[in-house]
Length: 298
Image 1 (cartoon, rainbow, N blue to C red):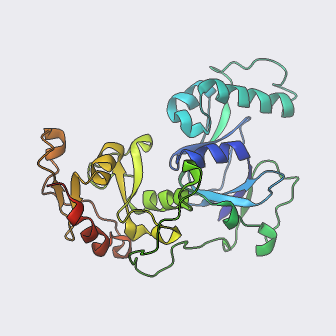
Image 2 (tube, rainbow, N blue to C red):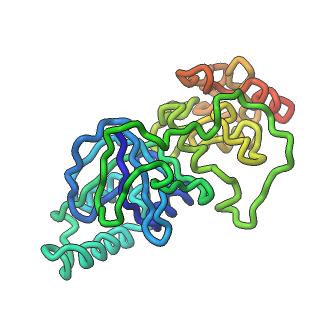
Image 3 (cartoon, rainbow, N blue to C red):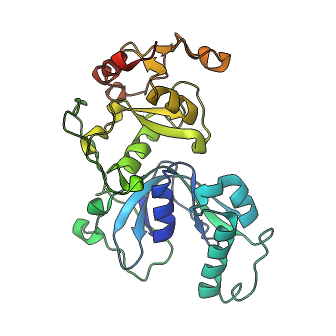
């Protein structure tokens, strides 16, 4: 089974731009009491007018009805808003516009219930990769305002990176004017790396979503760099050490710490092996790892 739901374009853009890809809250201003979806089912984002195309998906985790206060405490920016005030304002705006029962009066954020569709491993596609359901013989009328589930083969299933092994990218880096859009396909890359490493840092085991980042082994060059074999899921501080060449991972997947690092909280990882993905095809490219050895600050 898979599902499609109308998706607020601002919510989508905020999560994509800030690379918030796992355990995000696809919140609904009134409870939808979603049933039928199983853990791991794909939940596709139908971006609202004027786009009216699918812009990506997340994997269904769970559904619950909770108060806005609890939702902010639980998900924070993973609600798709920059602040608690913005989050509450957006809920109020939707209710005022669409609910005769609750609209036109200030909601009690401690008692009013919203719906929460919790999603992980989200992939937010670049605009050129958006999909029109009609091109896949999928009917999703504009009158649908909640969710539509499909008991059929998912025609959108794809492997963005193909089945080939990763090869080092030799082309010059493609840079964009705006840093936030500097790397094409980066949000898709992060979603795949989160899934590959089961949402846990491959060195520390950290699972807090806000602290996890997808690291490139060979630095980003172009979309060909976005391969699971060219990625590691790292806690934010470990990512900084890796990018600064103060931490090196050899072809046997053993961790090496620079002698410049003396803090025991990091030295404990020296000589240990990283946690590898379950599927051998997803394991880090040894060629890409070896490329970094000369840069290691011993």
